[in-house]
Image (cartoon, rainbow, N blue to C red; front, side, top):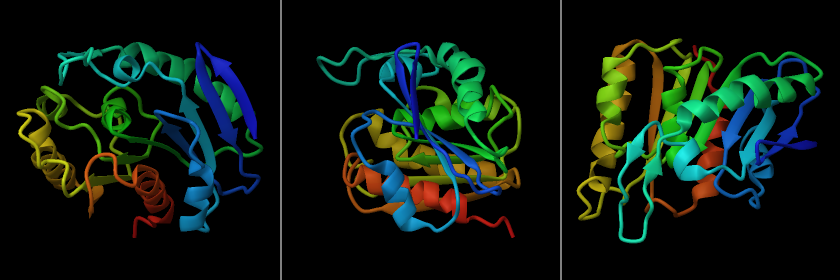
Length: 226
C-alpha cells in the first residue's frame, strides 16, 4: 500500500502484483471504510485500487454551479473540470508509477456525486474504459441534457449503474427525478451500443452505501464483455 497527498487530497493505492490487473479509481466521501476488503470479498478477480479522499466534495465532484438543496446546504460550486486536471495530470501519473505492471484497463467509480462525476469524466477524457456509478446524483440540474448534447471522448466498454429503490420517494422536486433520470441514462447508453447494466438495491440513498459501491466495482471486474 502506498499513500500520498496531492493538493490536499489523501491518496491511497492498493497495488496488485498480478500482470492482468486493472486499475480501479474510486472517489470517496470518507476514507475510514474498508472498501478494499469489501471488494475483495465480492470477487476473486485481480485489481489495483486507487482511493481518493479528502475531496472538496460539492466542488470537485460537481460539473457546474447548482443551488442548495436544503436550508443550510451551501450548494455545488462546479469545479469538476479543475479537479479532473489534477486527477489526470498529477494523481494518475503518481499511481501508475507505483504499479509493477501496466493496467489492462482503467475504470472510474464513485457513489452519489462521485457517481455523477464518473459519467461526466467520459466527456472530458478517454482513459477510462469502464465506469461504476452507485446511487449517482443524476437529479443534478441539466445533467441529462448535457449528456445528450455532448460527445463522449471515448465509448466505454461497460457502464454499471445502481440505485436505491427508495431514493426517488421524496417531495423534493429535484431529488425525486433521480430514478427517472438514471433509467434514461441506462437506455441512452444501451441505444448507443454500450454494454450497460442497472441494478436496483433496497433502501434510500445512504443505506448500505459501502456494500453497494463494492458490489458495483465487483461488477466491473467480473464483466467479461461476451
